[in-house]
Structures are given as structure tokens and as C-alpha cells.
Length: 321
Image 1 (cartoon, rainbow, N blue to C red):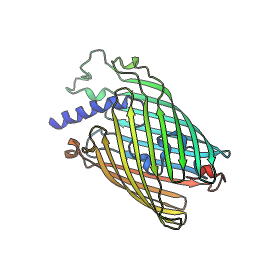
Image 2: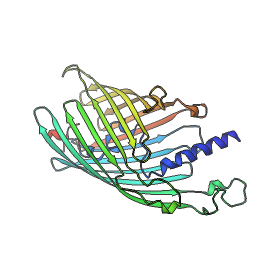
Image 3: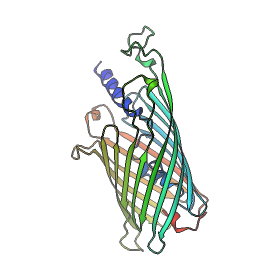
């Protein structure tokens, strides 16, 4: 009985996050897949970039969050890019599917010093569904929701926009993204909840090589996220190391995520590895959970596979990653 109560508590606690009608942000962006967090990365690269990602949180807990994404972006002209993202997310008794269509424009500030400024915008569509069938705890065929007004499944479709800006100078980069800038309509759920969806990301880091001939590249980075509705925020502190073999590379890293008022009490921490061989890309990450859920779960797993095709379709330096 205690196990079921625990699962229900987690499901209810996370349903509020699912109702933000957005793609859950974990560490997908660290698998050389920054486009999942901001439209400004659309078309940065002289190839068509495609990535598929599967994220399974809290393995061992029934109905734990499970997310799949498919993304692709490509150069458009010499200084612009377009991209698309599709996702499916299930979290307990909630499910959402959605898509983003993005456009970005990249300006060259100083070609000699590799300084670029990029702007991006995304149109988002999200379909959210609440399934109450599993709330029938006494077997009488009637969902036991505790609210007599909730007698059937609920669903809604939300349309929204993201905007972002990215500055790059040599190995340094910093991006700011505002996600879901429009408010949402909650009448379909008949609940009292703030209708503000906006959340903000800051992602910054530096790619460092000892010298131009070095095969090793170090990349510390920080990802900060804050939600406007309730002020909650979190930070990822990351470190990646790449070994270059001509145009191929292999990398390893670690990520440390915490709530910003609990730096020494991390939500999770874990290693990551990946490789790009020819046009093929693969990455895997494991996140060790460092809270009460650890007693019930073996951790969180993420796999990314991808392909880069039509290499060399742009000769503009602002397209180089």
C-alpha cells in the first residue's frame, strides 16, 4: 500500500509540471543537441542535422516520466536556418505530444575573430491529455478523483512561441531563451492554477583547446532555468571533454543538477559519453538520483542517436559550430 501511495504522490506532484504544456528539459541538449532548448541553433552547421532522443526517468517506478524527441535543422540560404522538433511525453496519468517549427538568422559581427549574433523564433503546438481511467481504485467502474465534477478525460491544445538570442565569440557562447511567451487557457481543467507558462533559459559555456594542434577540447557549461509562475529555478553545471580524430570525435562528461536554493543537495548527478563517427552520432547518459526516490529507482537513462548528412552545404563561417 505504501508503494502505491508513493507512486500516486509522485504522479500528482509532477502533473502540475506536465500541465505547463512544454517539453521537459533534462540533459538532452548536452548530446550535441542544443536545438532542443532554443530556436537560435537552427541551421548552425554546414549539414542537415537529425537527432532522435529517448529519455526514461526513474527506472523501476511505475508510470514514471518517459519522453521521446525527434529533431532536425538545416541551413537556409547563407545566414539563416530552419528546424523542426517533435516530442511525445508521458508522465503518470498525463500525456502530451507536441511540435516546434523554428527559424533563426545568424549575423557575422567580426569574421576574423569568429564573433556571431543569432536570433531565433519558434511556433509551438502542444496537445495535453489527462487520463482519469486509472483512478478507479475500488473497481466500481467510476474514477475516484475526489471531485464529482471530473467524470471524464480532459484534453486541451495550446499554441505558443519561443524566442531566443545567441552570442558566440571564439570558443565562448551564451544564449538566452524565453519559452511559451503567451499565457494559456485552463478552463478545460476547471482548476485554479496560474496561467503563466513562461520560463527562461540561460545556457553558456566555453570550448577550450590548449593550442590549435591539440586533439583535446574542454567544454565547461552552465544551464540555468527559471519559471515565471512560481519562481522555482534550477541549474546544471556540466563538463565535457572531446578527443578529436580529424573530423570524428569522442567525448565524455558529467552533469550536476540542483535547485538554486539547494546547491549542496543535488537532484541528480551522472556521467555522459558520446561519439561522432563519419555522419553517425551516438550518446548515452546516466543520472543518479540523490533524493528519496533513490530507494525506488535505479536512475534515469538517456540515449541519443543521429545522423549528419549533406556535409558542406554552406561556406559561411557563421554556420560553423
